[in-house]
Image 1 (cartoon, one colour):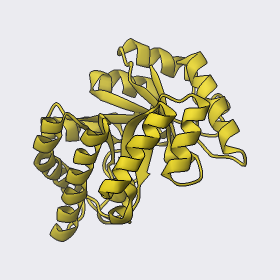
Image 2 (cartoon, rainbow, N blue to C red):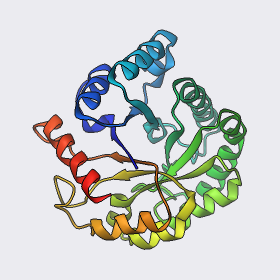
Image 3 (cartoon, one colour):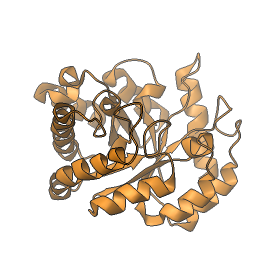
Length: 258
């Protein structure tokens, strides 16, 4: 198992976060990208060179990139221009991940309009199919995540999209904390998703730190072992008023329990 931290769980810019993750002993970092992606370091060649230098200096990997950008520009949007823009930044991200050695892109299954029906999963499947060939050529997973809005809240909903796309490089980024918050059983969902899971977010609903919330962490750990998951566990936990201490505490919990 490898352990990472999502950049939203640590204040500061990418350079500060990468350095802190290295000091704390993480194996990797997940860089979150927002709506202003064109101004992000990842979208500039000098910025990517600097990220590569920082990762090497900190002796950590780029575990993944989170395209939070989809919360503004969703593949579920009824507007063709929005979907085209989303294809553009997804294609860019695939290339930046390949360049920097990351194997996964977190793709949150976001909504495109207040009332979507069956059009939303259909659009997600169609658009991911268009992106899949580039992902396959670069060996970067487009890993779709269960999130609180949109058409991908459950394991069944994620499987519908993955199977509809039909690419080995469109798989699942499972968030067991979200699974519980959305009314599901994370243990059962992990079992159902099985080998489809290529990366995992770790949080514990109802607790400030892992182990203090409502999740049965021993059961979740056993479920991941049961499907032979041995990839990244990435913290998406509250920064608290002492982010390095919180990250260190949560990292120690992961190492002891997963």
